[in-house]
Amino acid sequence: GIDIATLRAKTGCITLDPGYGNTGACKSAITFIDGEKGILQYRGYDIAELAQKSTFIETAYLLIYGELPTPAELQGFSDLLTENQMLHQDMLQHFDAFPPKAHPMSILSAMIHASSAYPSMKTYRKSLKEAFPIHAARLISQTRTIATCSYRKAAGLPPSYPKRDLKFTENFLHMMFSLPGEDYDLNPEVVRALDLIFLLHADHEQNCSTSTVRMVASSQANVFASASAGVCALWGPLHGGANQAVLEMLEQIHRDGDDGSQFLDQVKNKVGNRRLMGFGHRVYKSFDPRAVIIKEQCDKVLQQLNVSDPLLDIAKKLEEVALNDDYFISRKLYPNVDFYSGIIMRAIGIPMNMFTVLFAIGRMPGWVANYKEVMDDPESRISRPRQIYTGETLRSYKPITERA
Ligand code: ACO
Image (cartoon, rainbow, N blue to C red; front, side):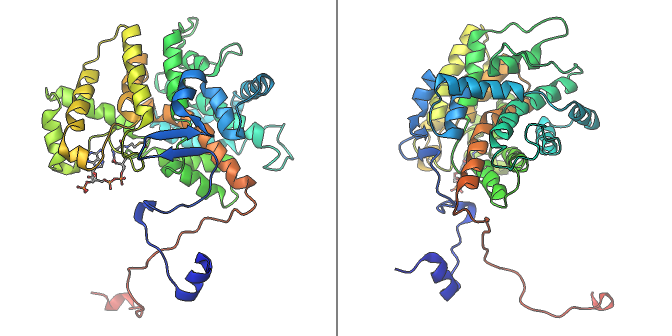
């Protein structure tokens, strides 16, 4: 009958759980995962059904507001995204301050953060809560705008402005690839594949970046600061950076003339602590349902674009061997969502350093939904983990002249 806070106060007892393997940090009604059974649901809808029937934008609405939108709600949400898709003119100057080789993830986190310094007139004088729908729309829409502007700057191209008559993912492709005076030719299969990538990445409960967003939000920081922290957490190769790392790994294997078997031997023998990137997951211990959908889409897109990619052959071979190898079986390591997504993006012409940026575009609705959940929770407390101190016990200060 004693609660944990009272127990801690009475005993000084602290639970240590490195990497939060078994510690729930919050209650959430957004996403459900059963890692043993390979189940992923957004607001109670199975990911496979959403992947087949929904779109990224409809799913974004579902994640943030809890229900699938009516036609009027979807129209209102889309209109808000369109109204908020342009960056403040002064923000364009920021791009010039980055060196030409700046990683687009560093540009994205900085620009999202900077965005809070340019409040729109519509949210001026509104409380954070009242302004939330506009801020949410701005974040989802402008992440796409920032991403495409940073790509174009690195490519020496002027920014390409979104078109009002194009849908979200169509506009992304248009803003990335249209050349001055020459519109990008939209292929419906490519649009569908990219929309699916965004949708499959849209949320994934308490992963590293989403927990980071919630932790920052718990201090009542604004949604731009919280989301920008999410981008930083996502960048690491063990998290969102894995999609870039997978392609780098496949390219290296290809360059070495290996069919993947030598590389797998090195992984198993932990040579240089190598990992099979795109494999393994903290929660999924049977399969990642997103990986199954992505693999199918990968085959479709490459066929449609008439692309034959030796890296896809290597990836399939790695998967086949690993799934029958005791090292991977005993550790319950299976392909995750990033194993095949990079091959699709490469076929579409997205450069490798933009892969994690695309993940961030997809994940933004999930971050925004989690931010809202923290803000709407009357019982929300500031996140403040404890630690087990392992340093020195009390000692006296030595003047510098007495130190050896
Ligand atoms: N390749 C080879 N061995 C692996 C891999 C891998 N990809 N992943 C885990 N292992 C091994 C570890 O070496 C360890 O072996 P040991 O028991 O002999 O020491 C064991 O499996 C357990 O590994 P942990 O690091 O404890 O697993 P954790 O749950 O902490 O890590 C993670 C999960 C980070 C996803 C890990 O599997 C990994 O590094 N994968 C590769 C990177 C990747 O694809 N990340 C994307 C994740 S999905 C996403 O963010 C969208």
